[in-house]
Structure formats: structure tokens, C-alpha cells
Length: 348
Image (cartoon, rainbow, N blue to C red):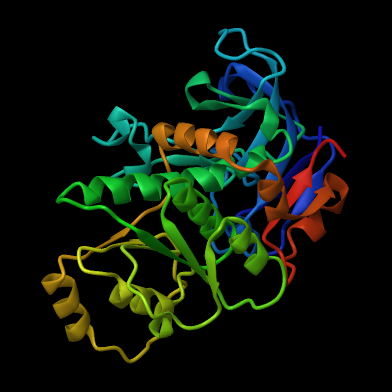
């Protein structure tokens, strides 16, 4: 079968292997045929050789962590043949740490977790893959063309879950959310904000292309200006760019008792002039919270599946700006100027 692979640590080692072996039974009882995988920034960084770890005993990693498949067999009876399924990306560490021991592997304390297509587990960019029932998520049949969005949606489902948990520290009735960045994570964060009935604002640099219209289609407001120039203070900020200036300005913009979730990862190596004392004063005197969020556990994957099932399917399809067959995998992993989400279609 076909598999899209890299040699982690070796830049530009991306290739499609036409005779990759069938998935080993120990990978899981559920066998699925691949329908599609999504491409994201993590894949680009692995291809560039910045990180990634192959499974033990090999130097090759199958890519793909944004999975969508259809069940071929499940002897456990957890799923039925023909069900749409996605595989949860992160698995708990073998020790396990206190969080992994209770299913909170997204909060792993010792870093010994594994991840499909990223760290020590083969990914889903292959014609067939296996998954353990505990890490298989059934999807609504209506999500046949967009179910690969489940993984990024799980990330923002976790962000919202933690925002709401923090909000319970006091009487808190948020009215507005600012999302910085209108990539897949930002747009999906905005979707979940709109599903919560909040006034949603999305900020991005793009003034052309699909992003402004996608935001407005949610009933949200689009801003193409610096955060500091906004004329309101949001109750919630979800920062999805990782750009240092945007991160700092977002922390300063939140309303009193506001909550700022940092969901974008900065590249580092850049120094900017900033009044840290003024930020500290504002956070303390206004009882604001700033926290980081990454990955997701089973609860968040299930929440994400419910959110996608409730969403407008036409809008979700509009997030996918390119669908390419496996044979054009090099194009799929080459970023385009107006890309939001690129998909490798295993059925084409």
C-alpha cells in the first residue's frame, strides 16, 4: 500500500512509498481504510527536519495526524464496518505520569507520550491504518468530506474547555471573544465561539482571499488591523498566531477578569521592546488569566465531533482550499499563499 513518509531530522526527505507494509496487528484491533489526511504546520516542520521521531527500530516515520478513515473491521464490536472514524493522535506515556494515568495525556508531565505521525507512532497518511478502540472516534456520517478537521477542532475544544473551567473561579458571563489568526485553528476556534452564542471577532492580516468571508459567514466580525487598534476589550482571547507582538498585545487587550488562551506556538529568536511591568500590573489588578493550551484528550475529541456535527457543512467544506490525490503529495505539502486547509485524498 502507499504511505507518505519522512526521515525525521533529515530535511526534505519526503517521499511516497508505493509498497509500504500493511499495518501491524499490535497497532490496534480496528482496521480502517484511509479516506483523507489533513496537512498542517506541524507536518511542514517535520519535513524541514526540525523535529519528529520515528517508531522504535526504524528511521522512517509515516506522516499524517489529521485522519479520516472508514472502518473495514473491528472484532471488538466498538465500531461497525463502514463507520467513519478518526484516530486520536496522542497516546499516554508508558510510565505513566499522574495525568496520563487518568486519561489526561494532553497534560503529560514527563514528555514520554507518543503521537501518530509526529513522535514514535506511524501516522495515518497510508492506505490502511489501525487504531486501538480506546483511541478511535466515531464521526457523524455527514462528515464524510470534512471529518479530517476533527483533530484541529479537538485542539480548540480543549482550549474552550479550559477557558470555561477557569471562568468558574468567579461569577463570569462572557459576551465576546477575540481570535487572533484566521488559519484553521483560528477559524475553528471562532466556530466554537459562535456556537456558544458569543460575539466573535477574528483578527488577521489578510484583506483578500477566503478568510474575511469565512469569518463573516459565521456572523462574526473580521478585523485586518493591529490588536492594539481595536476599540473594545474582549472577555476571551484565543491567540492562534504565535507572533510575539500579537501575543503581547492580546494579553494587554483583554477585559477585566478576562481569560487569554495562547494556542499558537512562537518560533523564538526574536526580541521586541515591551513594558513587562505594565503588563504585570494590568494582569494583577484586573484579575486576568493567561494560559497555554496544546493537544487534547478523549473528552475534547468527543466534544469536537459534536461541534463539527452541529456546524454548517458547507462552511466546513469551505475551509478546505485544496484537495489533492496522493500522487500529488509534494504539492500538498507545499504551502500556498491562500491556503487554509490542504487535504490529501486517498480515494481519488
